[in-house]
Length: 125
Image (cartoon, rainbow, N blue to C red):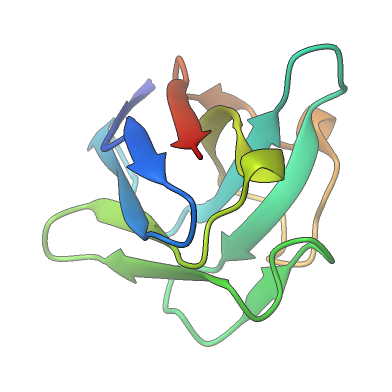
């Protein structure tokens, strides 16, 4: 059993930065591929980024390239999403996810078996 808990969501100004964190707990969690998804109001859940267990393979969705960075700290069993130059269109609920089988280039939400409950990020003018 694996539990994921997100933190770091909140309100930021346009052009600002924010780091989201996800803490993993449970059995056999060190080898999990870990990912971030987001879901804006009225939209489907969208893949943002993923990283494999050792950090050697990273994959970004098209909307995240160049501004978002995914990383992990295996010693702390945490992984992160660093967001910069935020815009109003980045407003969404961000979810962390993990799976023991999925590769880092897996973008389908159905491939991830472990999910956090979501953090809301809002960008103000």
